[in-house]
Image 1 (cartoon, helix red, strand yellow):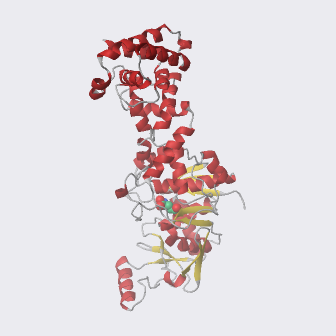
Image 2 (cartoon, protein in one colour):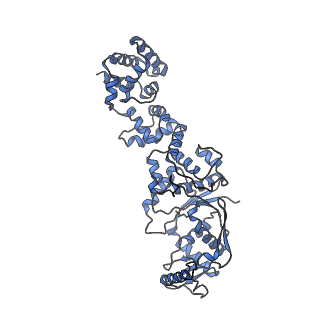
Image 3 (cartoon, rainbow, N blue to C red):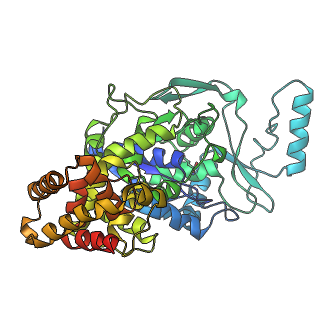
Length: 463
Ligand code: GLU
């Protein structure tokens, strides 16, 4: 086959939802895997519902996901002259015709067909009248009255539609604008798109689109219609199942790689492998393993996968990603070695960046907030002397001697002098340093906090 050219054609009537992101992903992966091209097209012909804000939101989400495009973005509203030219070709070659029937007349035809127990369709009155352009005239495609149109779908297998059940549908409205199916075909054809992966909600349009290709004497592309994503109640995923937009997942602190990994698995498999890096997805993605049965969106699985992706990333990458989440709490951090150590201590314990920012807060604040119960239980007068000795000996350490073995040695000595078990020293120290009873491992946490903060936090408690 020639160079694979795929596309993603969102309608900018809202944010990028996760079903759309999955479609974009499949097409992008196939282009990247084959060394092909991925085209972005904005289907904005519905000028009432399309907004600039949605276009921007879609771009932002694609950028965030790391789904980049080689051509476009093309905007359908800028391509009307091209659509008109192709409509004229269809008329000239006898594959389309002008129709002067009013919407009311067409409604009446449909009613009549229904009354006669037939499909409610346009009765083709103008089909052979050879009308030219004129006011209030639409252009209709001359759909064959016999035979069938087969969608040779790579996911569902060949799917056949009776031509007699397809209306002579409108391709140009009376105001001269193209209809959806016409614009899609002209775009896909002129943009060289040869592989179309999309949701199976579009399967009903496909025979009509194939008929337009045929009318234009062109080969239709390869089609693959993937099942819709379902919610946990097996109904098509919608708002009532929870977050729908890619942006919401971004705000929840899901990593782009985790959402990509999760979305691709909702419709594609590679044995029973669940975890994929972006690179692996590109290497392993294949059309043969696109699934025929719909999958359910499961938030817990996404979170578990996100936790794995957090662990798989370097401390520096996670520190970078964490910055805006910590900023939400009014705390400014930079991607420093100290922040990376803090991240390292938290990586195994957090499923999202939101959780991590919350858990990391104690590292970065100037004044700790203390859990009163923890203070009452662990910061008793008799522990003050051992804590004081910890602070003194830690302070005496040179910065490059502030290491885990050195901390262990300090602990050993203080524990011996005061006849304390490990927990009896570690837990009060933890409360003094974090304000809470739960934190990463004590030495790891102290090292990430650093000598000076550790000492000054202990001293603040001693006071
Ligand atoms: N603009 C359509 C949508 O957002 C996509 C059409 C297509 O994939 O052919 O659903």
